[in-house]
Image (cartoon, rainbow, N blue to C red):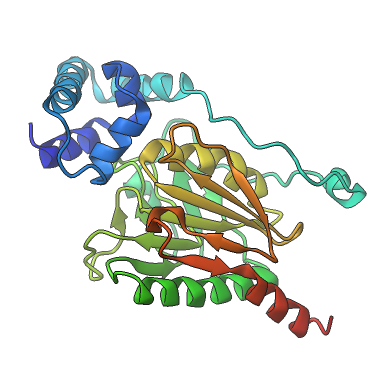
Length: 294
C-alpha cells in the first residue's frame, strides 16, 4: 500500500495512530510521523507492518454490521490510556478553590457522526469528539484578546521563516482522526502542508495546535484534547492558561518528552520550527497590563 492508500484505509476504518501502533507493534511516534508526512521516506518494514495491520483490520471489519463496528470502535477507544499529565504548579488558594467546569455532552445514546454534526443549527457551536457532542460557550474577552495577539506573532514568525506554514484561528473545523466521529475547533492552527482554503474543513492532524483555557473548556483542553491531539499525530500542542499566566508546551515528536511550562514573561520556542521561530509572550503580557492599566 502507498502512504496515501494507508491514509484512506485508516480514515475508512476509523483507526487512530495509537490503535495502529498497538496492533502493529510499532512505536507510536513512528506511526504518527508516517501519517503526518514528517517522515518523507519511511522504511519498508514500517510500511509493511502498517499495511498488514490495516488489511487485517479491514478483513475483521467487513465481518461486522454497522452496529457491530460502532461497538468495536468504542471498545478500542476505551482501551487506550491517556498520556501522563504534568504536575500542578500553582497551588494558590484561588487555584485550589476553583471547581472544574463541566463540559456538556449530548444525551443521545450511541455515537454521533459528521452527518449529525453538520445537521446542528447554525447558532449552536459544538465539537464532536469520539461521537459525543461538547457544547462551546462564548469565549471571554481576555481569551479573544490573547488569541488575536498570538495569531499576529505566529503569522509574523511563519512569514519570516521558510514560509511553508500557514496560521489559522478558530472557528475552523478539523476532522482530526479523518474518521466520522471527531470534529474539533482549535483556537489556533499551524498547518505546514499544502492546504486548499476553499475546503470546508481541515482533514487530519495539523502540525501544531494552540488552545486557550477558559472555565468551560479547561478540563476538556487539558485532558481529552491532549489525548486526542497526541494520538492523531499533532506534532506540538500549546495550552495557554490566562488565569495562571503560563503556557504548557507538549512537543510530541520527542519520544521522551516532558511538558515544559513557561511564564507569560518568556520567549517560547516553536519546537517544530527547529529553532527558527519563537513567540515572545512578554509582549502579550505587556499589552494585557497596559489594557488593564497595570
